[in-house]
Amino acid sequence: MVSNKTFVIAEIGVNHNGSVQTAKKLILCAKKNKADAVKFQSFNADRLAFKHTQKVKYQKKNSKKNETHYQMLKKLQLSEAQQLEIINFCKRKRIEFLSTPYDVEDAKLLAKHGIKKFKTSSADLTDYFLHNFLSRNAKKVIISTGMSTLEEISNTLKIYNKKRTKITLLHCISNYPCSDKSLNLNNITTLKNTFKLPVGFSDHSSNKLAVITAIGLGCRVIERHITLSRKMKGPDHFASDDPEQFKKYVQLIRNNEKILGNFEKKKQKEEVEMLKTSRKGIYYLNDLKKGKKVTSKNLFLRRPWGGLSLFDVKKILKHRLLKDVKKNEKLKINDFKK
Image (tube, rainbow, N blue to C red):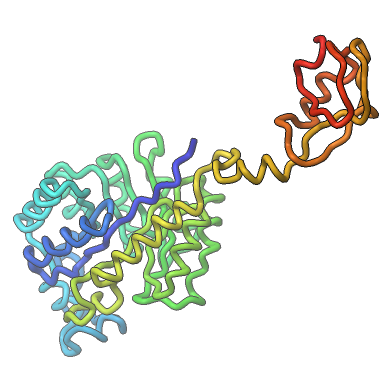
């Protein structure tokens, strides 16, 4: 039976603002509110961006307007020692640590500390060097697909040996927050049908219907940004969930799982009373003597249910009765000679 359990990733990203103590508070928040994993970003500003690189519009909204993209990244990057402290903290708190490496050196650092499961950003979908390294060193890779085409995704997947590396694709719209009209959640089905891989959803929307729809479309990995406060300074805080919002978000996912149920079609316990009353039973239309062959002309259907269906009747039609039966008597399998 296929499980409908959703793997929930609390995307801390850079919402730690460069502070390990803030990172730990966010990890505890994610753990308390039933996330399955926390995710960070591993990067070195000097390797990631030129100093003149400018911030995009959403980054300017909640961070210093006069600083460059590079200057922003420089304040948010975590050292190897800081990342190791966070990795070990996650182990102690029994929540899975994930991180997004932004180049091969970042990935090597994570691998050095025993990380075998990676998440790649939409921005790096076309980074051949990074994916080539992960294809040889990662057991699992979650690939975000924002800002991409099917051809670009296909080209990236060709780098991987699917027998060696387990791949999950995340549908993603790379804006914070993204608009309803841009969500295009039908792409989840497109990704599933095109690549025959598990598909999840990196949810940057402000509409909670999005995650319900995504799970209904088959997503079993959901990523959502969290922050201690949406009023904190930093590029992503205003588009993230605070602790109470994240708690409700995860509860929404778990309630949705209950509603979806599993993939086994069976009678539910709470249907039994209705079944016994509303499904028709099989009864004798008239008195019949022992030895009589019973045909459909000797039977009729009426409520309440007697435990048998017409499919059971087909097995005993034209068999002889082992005893006399009365009109309106309920048909039973042991009435017949087999």
